[in-house]
Image (cartoon, rainbow over all chains, first blue to last red; front, side):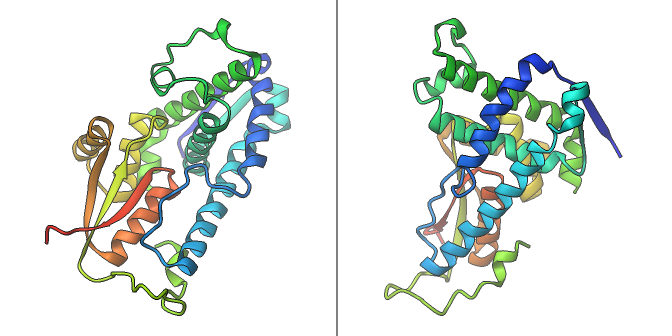
Length: 153
Length: 99
C-alpha cells in the first residue's frame, strides 16, 4: 500500500487545528456546499441531504483523526489509500465553509490567486486564510501522490 | 450505488407531479474554492472520464461557469449528482429539452 508521511511544523499547524475543530462543530448539521435540489420531492430531498451530511461528518472525522497524540509528539501525519479519499473531501468541506463563514471579506479572485497581503488582515481572518491554504496544500499533496489510489478505489 | 436509492420516492408525491420521464442532464457549476486538480480527479473518479475529458469539462466549468457532464435516464443522473455532491461539487439535474 502506498503511504505518504508528511512532517509538519507544530508551531504553525497547531493553531490552525483550533479553527478546524470549530469548523467541524459548525458543519455537524449543515452541508458545506448547500445544493439546489428543486427537482426532488420533499421526502426524498430530506433523505438525500441526510446521507450527504452523514458522509460529510465521517470525512471530517477522518481528517481530525490525523491530528492525534502521535502528531503532537512527532509532528507527522500519514496518508494512504484508506484515508486519502475522505481527507481530500474533508479539506474541500472545510475550505468551502471557511470561505462562507470566515473569509467573506476577501474576494474570490484573491482567494483563488492567493495574492493577499497577510500583514493587512485581522488576526481571525489571517488565521482562517492560513487554514484555507494549509488545507489546499494537504489536498494537492494527496492528489499528487495518491491520485491513482483514489481513482482506483 | 449510494444507499439513498433505497428510499421510497412515491409515497408523498406533491400535487405537482415531478417530471421523471425523458432525458436528464447532470450539470456541474463553477465555484471559487475547488482546485482544478481536485475537480479533474472527481470527474475521473465519479464519471469515469479519462484525464483529457476530465480536464476539458473542468475547464468548461471554470471558464463558462457550467458544464454538462452526463445526459441520460433520470435514475442514473440522480446517482451521478449525488456522488458529485458527496465530493462537494455543485451539481444539478436539468431536463434535457433538446431531445
